[in-house]
Image (cartoon, rainbow, N blue to C red; front, side, top):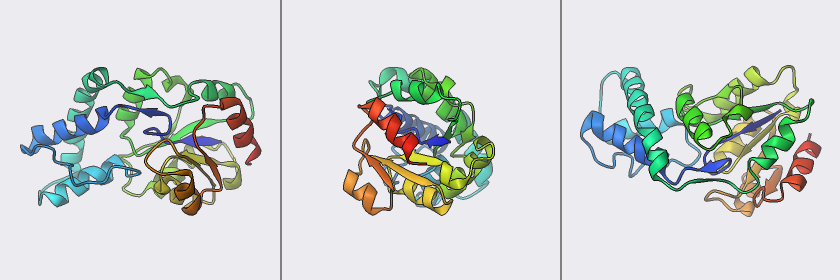
Length: 222
């Protein structure tokens, strides 16, 4: 079982997600660039939003705010995706096609994105059909919880050591290790091969441009 992160692993949205989140926050609270001091990389959308509330000392019904924020974000994201010039990361969709064609492989998501945000991004870049299930960013602030939930939903009896968690940040790596799964780093985000390896990733790629070699290495890692 291979569980993929989305942003900077499968695709780069050109900043569409960040822009739509900032716009939704502004619409709700009248604060421009409300997430300017919030670290996005490797965080869940729940964690990002709640940190935004804390930094701006906004108190009240956090769950109610979160639901309204997500609703506004979903409305803004499609236009943001159209405006930005994002792209699939090297090797996609070929790697997904190669993996999904095997009867002994299951693909899923372990992403910090809100579920509908994930669907919108993947659909825009034409790869949503590869991922029938997973766990998403509204479900926890802790990425280790996201991996645990994804594993439960997608594993179909797979042992933890037969599950690969693939992402571009040390948060992806630590969440994989916390669940006893194989941590696979890909240096298509802000972290280098060395940084991902130092964070504990057992398998590291510069990128997946050589998708045939990558598929063979991923399948040989379990």
